[in-house]
Structures are given as structure tokens and as C-alpha cells.
Length: 424
Image (cartoon, rainbow, N blue to C red):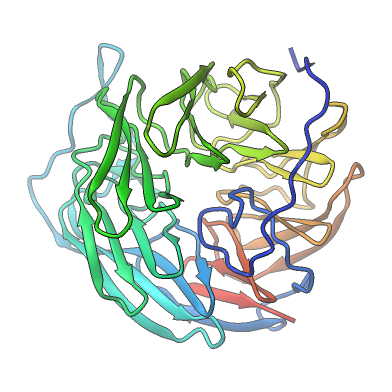
């Protein structure tokens, strides 16, 4: 079944007009920017306002508050002999992913703060230093989760290696040990979510000890904890009004973000839960791309029953995006599918950029354009709407494994070795 549209119409709400980009995928956690004067053309010699070196490995994306940019990184140190990962199982069988690595060295997990105007590194603080509990994918990082900020502190999460809060001057305010989270040797991925006075963490573990919890953002004390009967996930929950939407292979669950009480439960995404939910106008879409491609929509504040199902065009890693009257699915090879949000009609399907590429980051939209950034560091500017058109191809000349952020006329892209600020 390719497309079943059971209830008519879903559309996107307008994003916050704040100039800040305070969390994973921006103000509304949907990848939509309200900026109207961003550069649409750049190269290593054009419209690069500044670039600043970033040491270590990281797949986290930049966040912005005012004139402060925050980022995390994983710096590998000396060798450590004798460490072994926890025993993972798939069903009753012991499993070790062949591309897992990372435990043979000491890791230093840092939080960085840059000046937005100049790119100057203002401070770099170590949150954790030492051995790690579980392995990671060879292309991953223990600094994969994107931090979140409320304008007073920055909250950085590193999976089993802990949660840390720093003030804007770089002073450690508190830290929290979430316990030994098993990532089945793939590393951490889910990012923290800020809800009022709470920092919410979804940390699903492959040892059937999954849970979701909330911390007091001022002191890191546990406010509530809810056990979850599911395996490891890497998706970031989305806070939508009075609901917190979480995804997993076998279930999608809505929680009350104030108490952790389960509100409703729906079917799972039938694959590894890596892409984050996206929403608009009371409708939520969840997806997965491996081993099966599957996406469905349901009503927020509803009962979890799908109102749309689609079985093509989804990604293992990148999240989808809503923009204007259309919903866009993107694959790991940057194939784009556009669905009409009012009728469910497929406007185009599997359209590709000019080159065969792979994507690790998620799309960002602004001013009638959608940005798809490849792992090669090329960003394809796609005109939003029912007709596929590549407006131009831009490059920073460096590989990219993260998602762009925007703020006050700038596009910020974290490359392999630098943080780039793009501005006209």
C-alpha cells in the first residue's frame, strides 16, 4: 500500500518568529526558519561570513541564543586496553554490529560557545572525560545529540556519559547520570527537549530498560520517570502543546510532559526509530527508513490511529519536513517526495539533486526554499511547492554530518573540521 488518506487535510502551523534556534530543528522542532534574508548562494570564496575550527568528532547541530552559538564535540585521547562493550542481543541471539567501534580510547566530551557575530570561540568546557560504556557506529560520535538552551543555560546530553548544564559563562551548574544506556553499539542520538521548567530525556535502551524522564532544569533533580517497554531508539521527542510525542519501532506514545503519564499509544514506525516526529495544525507525522520504509500521520491529542500511511521515500537518518501546503519526505540519498497536505496527493516522488549523494542531516526550510545538505558538504536549494526545481547548488568545501541552523541573517553549518557562518 503506497498511500492511504483516511482523514482529509493536514497543514503546517507557522514557526516561531524568534531569531533564536534553541534546539534540534529550531524553534518549533520542525526545521522551519522564519528568516527572510538568508543567503541562497555560497561557496568557499563567497558569502562565508566566518569559519571557526572545531576539533574532535561531532554530529550534533549548532544551536543559537542571541549572540551565542553552542556546539558539542567528542575528542579522542589515549588508548585504553581491555574494555569490552555490554552484551547485546537481537531476540535470543548475541549481536555485535560489525561497524561498531569507539571503546579502545579515552573520550573527552566538550561543550563549546562561539560568538555569533565573529565566530570567536568564547569558551570550551569539558563535561566528561574517560572511558565510554558502549560502542558507537564508525561514522558516529558520542557528541551526536544536539544541546538545547533557554537563554540562561545550555543543556548537553551525551547518552550513558551523562547530562550536563552550563551557564552562558561556561560554569558547570549541574550534571545527571542517566545510567548505563545500551545503544546496541550504535552510539547516542536522541536530543534533550526543553518544556517549561523541565528537561525531558528519552533514553531507550537495547537491554529492555527503556524510560523517559524529566529533570528540573535549575538543579538537575529528577521530577518524574516513566518506564517504556521498547528497545533502543535515536529519535528526538517532539513537544506539541500539552503532549510529548515519542517514537519507537513497536509504538508511538504520547505523554503528559508535566507528569510523564501516558495519554495514548499508537502503532510503531516498523523500523529503527531515528527520524524525529514533525507536526503541523494538530497533525503529527512519524517515519522510519530501515529496514522498512514507512511513514504515517495521526492527530495530536487524538487516539494514535493513523490517518495517513505512506510506504516509500523515507529515510534511515534524516527527518521529514512540513512547509507551506506540502509535506516533504527525504531519503538518505536525498531523494525528495512532495505530498499535498490538503488532499494527500503525491505531487512528485523520488526526485533527486543533480548528483548522487548521501545525507546525514535533516532539511531546513526558509523563504520558499528547502535546503538539503549532503555528506559531501553540498547544499541543494530546492524551490518549495508542487514542482521540483533545484535553484542552485552551494558548497562549504567540507563534509557535513549535521543539520543547518539559522539566526539573524545567518545560516550555520557544522562541517567536519569547522563551524561555518553563511551570510550575504
